[in-house]
Image 1 (spheres, one colour):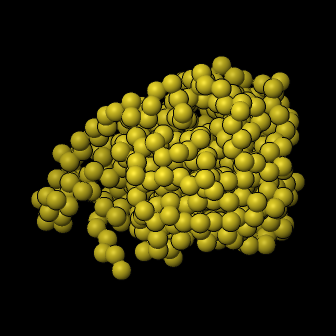
Image 2 (cartoon, rainbow, N blue to C red):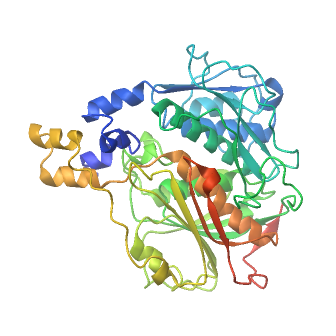
Length: 454
């Protein structure tokens, strides 16, 4: 059994309150988050639709890791589970297994409506998570805005749910005054900032092809979000998706705070084995690699040539174009209390080699002088080494990884459908409208990454 340090036990978003100075102790930070609640609502018709169910379940799974005071879902019709995720046979069973209560929320609790028509506000914060085609986002409850209807691409509901949970957290934490009063969304077919996510459907194809073979490197925050997104895709025969899952770590108490498929029952289990078990319940075929990813690895000819990378270290990233992969999608997330909502996505091969893209590591914002850390040191709760280790851990939020996963998976889906591949996508969820995208100058038309029809 692993002996976990204080750094392994601390909730990664609660750490934000320590690092920003909003709380002077761990107990104070935990009490702050214990006061955060959110209410999820879904209408009877929407509750029977698999895409609205996907949005609801994604919102539950993300929100209960953020709103530690509780997540409530109401009303909820008695309906079978229509999404292909392995969480029971009814929608109610799935919601309970993911950690929400099917109860009325307290008055004034922030509200996220899954779909639905415009309505009067039920609370000061009340938004609708809306989606159509490859587009997902949020709109204030009274606003008529809604994306132009089109056949729903299965990741759009996940994107809408993640953006809604992000907006609700922005509201309760007071990080932006416009939270809940704006329309925010992204097109996964055309993520460029100039795309009108509410109306631009001209080039969106219906989803017709899905990946057949993928390699996932890193099975924490990002890797588990990749798996959740893959689980939502409409595989006619799930066993047609073959996955290699690579990681060396075990699930710790803090893993659950950022990683959508981890819970306390999995603590001390290798991430590879826990995630392979989940993927196999979904019906996917899996193999595991329990070795550190570096330049000494060589992809064999019968192994997947397309990679989704969730590494958080520069040395591993520098090796991504050296081991024989044909196409790599890598997502990196911010680590500090100021930039934890930042997402930077790269694809390889690119106009620059990986060794130049990740030539130097960015130094973390030093936080050891914050009152919380100085208090632990003064009280003897932690020694200097323990404080340094705790301060060095990343701040993280599961909704950030969920948005990043929809963008990363969409690079693979666009590749399969003849769409634009992006060398770089850069955004911050505090103001996602100011994102930037750089289409790749490379031609991937001759690449056959392996696919199956929907």
